[in-house]
Image (cartoon, rainbow, N blue to C red; front, top):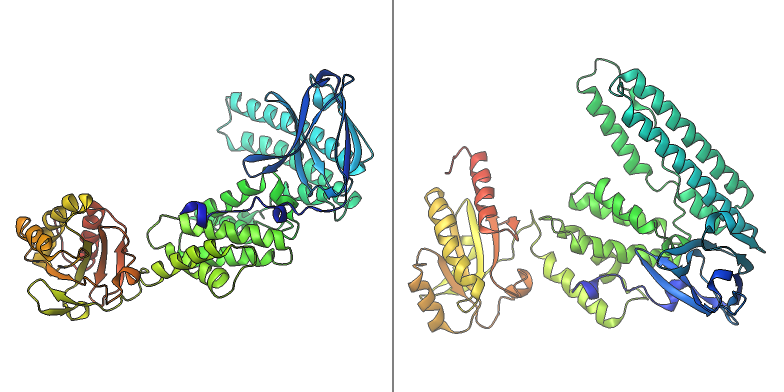
Length: 480
């Protein structure tokens, strides 16, 4: 399923190739007679775009008569231990020379001021990284590093480095406005968080926590301030996906509406750029689909409905779109805190029973079948661990047999003494329960409250026991 729902972006459209040409002369004497590849960064992968065999003088050309490379960060791949990143922007006719033993110090670029500036930026950041490491090591070895005044001293040194980096990138933005280099350099800038300690008075209750809270919500609001989400070159870097993952892991609260709003806000920022909009829409769909926290599937349903059901995305194949829409439908009827669809089914004895007529503080809704290997262990466990423990306090089990063989059903009920369950079935699926309750494998279990709203799903028996204990405790009932 992940392969269908997930990102399918490796197409000509995604790379944004246009009718033009590129010619990149490469001179690397150590690679004479050997192959060198030009590979585009894409998430954690490298997508090879061109390969050339250098002549006996170590000279070769990456070129194409009618295709222009999409802007981004590309790797010159000499060997597993020898490679270097270059920038592909609007200048696509230039030359590069280097010595593979000392690439950074020997690389020369002619014909592309933007790429030359990127090389200088790389050198600058390497030096800043070296200085940062020195400060960190000195702090680690300082015997007084627990003292506030010592920490402030090192913080001041870090602040100096940060100021230098911001100044350097500011110069790039002025020299190369609107370029791929400007987009990339700005994206590397950390968001500046105000000093909220000045806003929260001394003596405030839980002052440190309040400062952290303000910092968190500021970062959540401004996380993408330095990202030009209308420039698809960011997709072709090795840092954009990492920043996306970090944002959703650390700055989006795990609540369905929070996740949904964060996704919508992000993709709408990118709407002016088709490629970026497509990438982020598919990324958010996948992120919401793969979120396994109970109840978070509501974000997937709402996002999928808005961007894949209510409209037809032009980049999605009919097969994939059909699968996405089916997944949305299967989940939209069984979301947490939403009412369950009524079930009126025939019981084992032949009488009819209505789910909504079952009076109980909690109903365990169980879909199972007698030939399912997992059901053979889980259904008796439901009786022992859940029913026997909570039935004295009103819980009932509404057990729907999904198999069509009545004799096997009867035998299983008798063998496992399930007569206290509300045993029912719908052999012809006239109630459409498979769609309403996402029953495409067994067992499937839900817990409903007295109003038949979903309060739990996709939990193990042990997890359901813990949840029910918690729910009963809220009612003033301690269950052991």
